[in-house]
Length: 110
Length: 115
Image 1 (cartoon, one colour):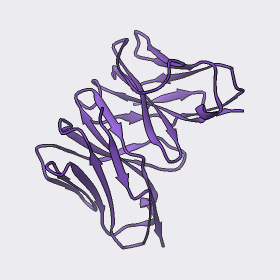
Image 2 (cartoon, chains in turn brown, yellow; image 1 turned 90 degrees about the horizontal axis):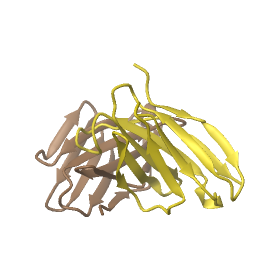
Image 3 (cartoon, each protein chain N blue to C red; image 1 turned 90 degrees about the vertical axis):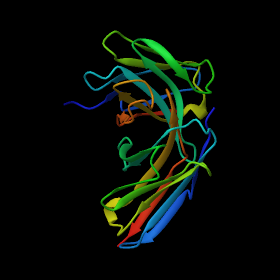
Image 4 (cartoon, each protein chain N blue to C red; image 1 turned 180 degrees about the vertical axis):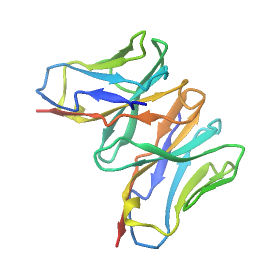
């Protein structure tokens, strides 16, 4: 089955800096790559996603890039704010099988 | 529109006991997935149900089981609890199966502690 690796496991940045989280996947048939944000005490919530026919997608301060050849995708957060502090999960999906990475705990220091 | 509701939110059990967790999906959602979340292991996929049928299953022992009812509500059961089963169990609902439509809507989870 699909295996998703996520790095780094923890990330600390100063407010206003950029943050980058990277994921690799093993199954070339995966075609959907969402990112979820989990705040303390809550369930994960979708923040952005990308499908395999697109190389990059942006939504305000958040962007995701996908390299199908290398089988990796990344989340980019610019101008980080304290409210961006959370655990972020990447996932890779094909058909009815979605698998998640182990998560990255992002801390934005004011 | 009500979100995904999981009950109970917190529970404490002892080794050898069994536990049943409940999940009510968003109205109209037919797919329910269950995940186990532990520190350092992220979200481990347990199983997914769609229209009362198990569509997919993760690599968990047979002590973990689930079902889905005709109203799409789902339950998962863990028998003969072990200390390592202590975790946050998350339920997610979606309109269709797995990643076909994209977004999973997660509940806040049921935190199980096994003593």
